Image (cartoon, rainbow, N blue to C red; front, side, top):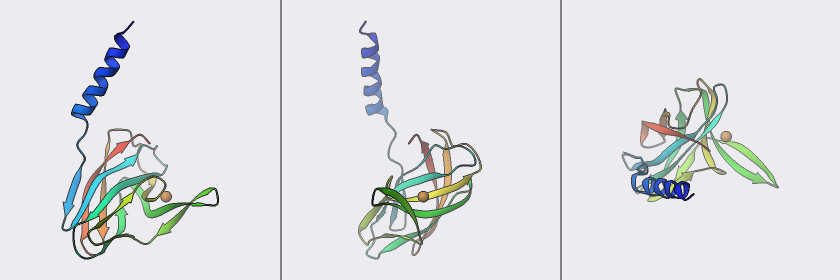
Length: 146
Ligand SMILES: [Cu+2]
């Protein structure tokens, strides 16, 4: 029976041809690239990730990430301390001039705390990102499976 293999091949082709475009929001000299959050249940917490690019000649910093769908939120960094993963609360994530910083699993993230609803793969959540110099911008983040 060769059919399943054929369908699998077809799916892979379709994914590569019609895969989602990387979402980029330009905001002054800041670019917010591919923002997403991980699926989670109402009442729980989840992490938001994105790449922040700075095309300007001055350093900036992400100082706040607010989510209407969460009771609270904080900027965190996950670090290995010995062989234990620890999260520390940060006041800001620096974005170097003409550089970029990645909020990604095992590193910087914005944490949505006390979700007001289930976040399922494919849903969108709003985030209000505040930068020290650029100010505040609202972006939509896609919900993805971890
Ligand atoms: Cu965290």
